[in-house]
Amino acid sequence: MDAAPTVLLYPRTVRPGREWLFGRVSQLGFTLGLVMLWVALSPSLLPRTWWMTTVGVGFSIAYGYLVGSLLGRVSGLLARLIGLQVRVSPRAERVLTVAWDVLLVGVSGVVWWWSVRQQASNADLVGLDTGGNAGMAVGVAGGLGLGVLLVLGVRLVGSLWKQLARLGRRWLPGVVASTVAAVLLLVGIVWVSEGLVYRQAVNAALGSAARLNAETPQGRVAPSQAERSGSPQSTQAWADLGRDGQAMVADGPRAADIARVTGAQAREPIRLYAGKQDNDTIEAAVAAVMREIDRTAALDRSVVHVITSTGTGYVQEWSVASLEYLTGGDVATVSMQYSFFSSALAYATDRDSPPEAGRALFEAVEARVEALPEGRRPRVVVSGESLGSYGGQGAFSSAQDMLDRVDGALWSGTPSFTPVWSELTAGRQPGSPQIAPVVDNGRHVRFVTRPAELGQDFYGGPYVAWEEPRVVYAQHASDPIVWWDPTLLWHEPDWMRERAGRDVPAALTWQPWVSFWQIGMDMPLSVSTPGGHGHHYFREMVPYWAAVLGQDDLPASYLEAVADAVAAGVRER
Image (cartoon, rainbow, N blue to C red; front, side, top):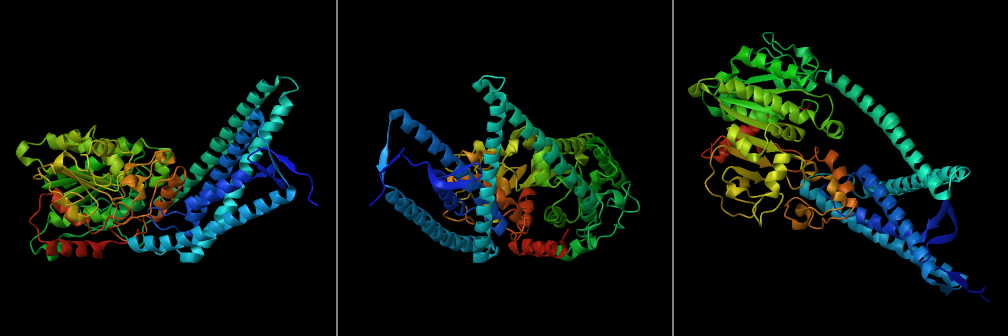
């Protein structure tokens, strides 16, 4: 005969007899945690490696469990306030709980298999292999473990708060003691996180970045051409240029290489760079670049190219070399290093330096050009990729300001927090997608996800005649560095709702909290995709620069030959 019926609050908030550290397991938390697991396994911009799955699943499960646990407590409190009760036998309760758990686990297995198939389809879209079934299985297992650790960490904080509050009640009223305990605990967490964890991590990263910066990239030697920084004639020593600066001045085509492709006599391209090693301030680096400009008579070239580097000083070789071929070498490219940090660390620790550097270098070149007689002034074009695009656009207060001051611009992989990009995207013509906004019918500015969109909008609609100066924003629908934003935590962006991207999964949807982590975890992998996807802008830079320069009549076969020549000269850094 069954035991007497059990009086339960409705809904059941904890599982009787199952204890975790510092408390019982919340049934509602367990349920919502698994639901968030299902959501975390939904497609993102790029297929996931095992560690990406681990992070996304871990944070999602923890979020679901904690929210579910809180909802369970609130619902229990409301049930007690209104006197709501449900009577069931212990046997029925056990059967229902086990059946519900089995159902949740079964659905989780089905969702995992569906996710594996989606990942395979996503990998085909961008040409990546991320580990298949085994990688997904390891990632989910790791995510479950990470989720448990995160929940236990939150419970540990809650337990400490209770202990502090209990101690405080010896001298203070209950509410005051609890409040004081919460404040003390919050201050302690912030102090430990900022003082011990954050600062130590940043210092370690800075030390590692500085050591890497001092290394010479494999296969590079100091240039012999006087037109390059780091040469015997240069004011900038080869050893002081830094790793990425050395690669920039050592690589790229020489005059003979360009002549072989163009079939005409070419000039020796000028590449000028100032490293941070011997120029510890932005002002010092700018002054060093200007000395190099004077030394090489760079302003006598028909085009001066100001390119803002990324955090480590990296300069996009595809962009520089493409421009050199298209101008027959009659171009001077100038850049400088303002940080040792990678773009991700620079983004997290110092968002001021990139636009300060971009503005300082451009304004110095601009002032020198404007001082020349009008008939002797070169065309000034600007560019940058990723954090370099953000920094380079920092020279301009608005899109109109950019058009008033440059003769052309090519920005690739621009982060969405860039003010000018945000201005143009927000003011796009109705009906144009966020991944490829139409601005003033394409009169001066055109956003493209592929070269075919230089002459028409994303949906094939016509533009008005393209007037100079011309500005191209290159951005792939599958580039998470463009689309990641903290507002993904609570807000669905237009680009997700519009589902216009050609190289992103059709099943991609926005989910609060989860999308933030998914797109964030896509960023490291985005630099491993083939060109034309993710954060890699390669062969397409040739037709983009040709468009900016107004070389619309160049045949496709010639642009392909230039791209082949650039590709042959690009080396790993």
